[in-house]
Image (cartoon, rainbow, N blue to C red; front, side):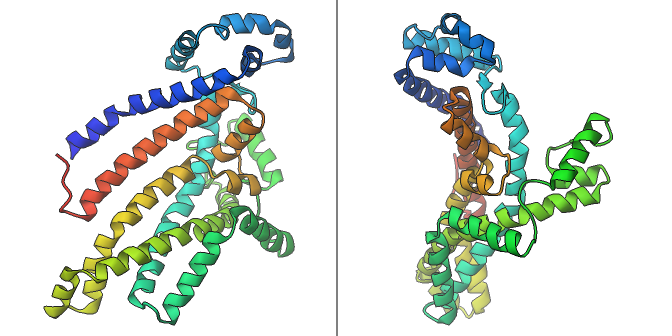
Length: 345
């Protein structure tokens, strides 16, 4: 398995190369002046747009332009983000902890809760509990994320004044900025719930956790609905197989048949879906982060697309390809752990 994992990791540069060629190639449809605007860092540079075009070979053949970009990228220079007014890599490093913190509190609850409900729906097939779970799954899967998010903001935050939007209350953000400048508060991980505890600031950790409740609920309801449906279908398929009938014929308790044998094999398609969901969440959930004002990768990508911020778009695409490739490798490894029959040579 280790050899297989190493071989898959060695394929990552190829994936990133192909993605970069495609994105840089698509940008060729824009005129050189539009592409040069992506490298403008100040108003003064707009008067020297022709110099920028020559500096980055934006009027040269595609292979020359790509080679120029690639040399800069290998040196850690992915360009300047107009959205954040800072280098692209710095933007990713700053915004990644925001998305990662949301994943930390949303991914496992979504997965565990959905697998449990999907299993119950299969066990109680066509009974009231199954019908209820199926209806709720269809409703939440069909419900647009922005509708659910806006409803939660309007009702729970706006009307009942519970929880919050953003990462922290405005007064606490100002206070932490002042303390960080004075060296009284340190950002160890960028995750406020963890950094608050590491700095002995329980109020910061609790406030950050409080502001994550609504986006976490949104993701659990919307993304979890799909896993419930997949888990139910997979579980029903396993319950109809010969090894389940054999286990029952041997007199094994129903709980052992359900939870030790059938559910374990039913997890294979769920693992595939969970891997993609993890990559999707870590890359930034665009609508959720925008609605709840979380300055993560999703919000950054949305702003970059609106402003045609080419370096940010390309940097986000490369990061996405990297995360998805890693998630696929992790999923393949989990297949072997869940099902001993799967072997990687």
